[in-house]
Length: 325
Image 1 (cartoon, helix red, strand yellow):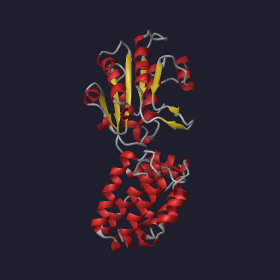
Image 2 (cartoon, rainbow, N blue to C red):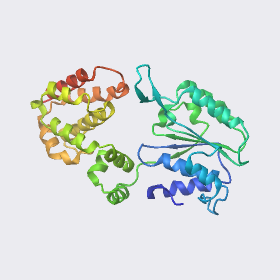
Image 3 (cartoon, rainbow, N blue to C red):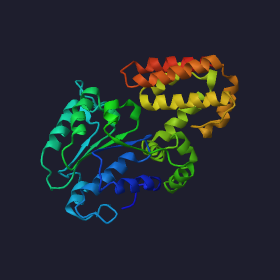
């Protein structure tokens, strides 16, 4: 079993080489969309395999491998964000890994292993651990039971508690070389425009296509290209239900960064297919207003999921954007 993606081969080889002297906790850190979660799962499968190859890779045929593939391995636990239903009956993905989940994992590692082999707990995204859940895991990370391994995956390792970081062997996985990502994406039917919009993360580009973001992005950016001539009220009314908050923030913030780059004579990074429009708007933009709006947009990312009146928020943003010109 080779690495899930070609750019992960070096780090995959390094993980396999740890088999004989395993750290009790490994942190895979780096940007989202490069395959860290897939890598962690493949490593977990190799450690739980009962007949691994000489290189440490999973055989794919033993009971352990079959159970892992089926998601039923008794010596594996996956701590991640779960779907919850609120009081109004609305189903949403949780924003934190709860302390109850962490305590269940602690209880799990105190039990004897089912197959008399290793036990593995995968935690992702690790930055979703709140203070209580992180503290619940700290003691067992400090003194883990024998043959127990924790694999943590983080897209934002700076958000982790220092005490949690200090107990992990950290492996950093950066963005793949642009040429490698572009070549792989071409085999998936995507081009460099999709890669640029994804910030250089190839799996994010694939996910964007699967979520149907391409048409919505084109619609929003075409409207933003109108600059001072856009209709803030009509667009806010049209978009507030159709454009998810996180996608809106991603589109507007990256658009403003590209606009600022064009204004300063730099290169467009995220939206190369709108370079002509951005160059035109960059000449019209008033720098103080553009900087202020970009700073406000950056800060708004902290409360993007807050239950605000989105139509009013969009209208206010679009009005402020129009005033930049």
